[in-house]
Image 1 (tube, one colour):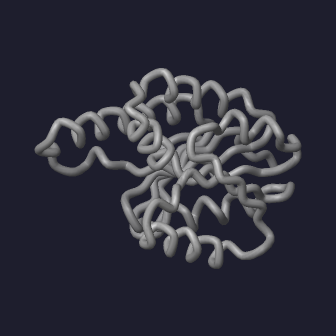
Image 2 (cartoon, helix red, strand yellow):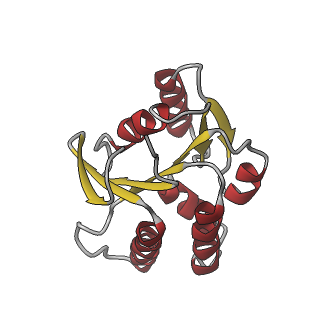
Length: 174
């Protein structure tokens, strides 16, 4: 069975995208590695991170990589299978540092495309809602939409998850 080198799993909040992506990674050969982009900046996020870790179980290696995905991937054996969860929080971390999101987003896509490990990226689809009322939210929505488009263009497999159900947008499920 051949697995895609880059998979993008999109979905709305609480759509089941992470659970679906985890199952995809676990079906691949090699040790599963979870690249966590979330930062526990408050008690609510800490509880969410702890809950996700508990649900994943002990067989995952977790690497916290809120900004430097390239650095996190560079130290990994090519035989592992990687889940990056999620591109949305990664982008948020860059915007919180007052960075122009374009250069880091392009660099991320290049890094993921050239990685020797199979990588599954989780990202939020946020473009189906209303136009946000403030400039910062509109900037984020635009940057997230462009990042998702760049990831989808490079991915071998793109899946949207709605209510826990996968819809293949590009490629074929392994």
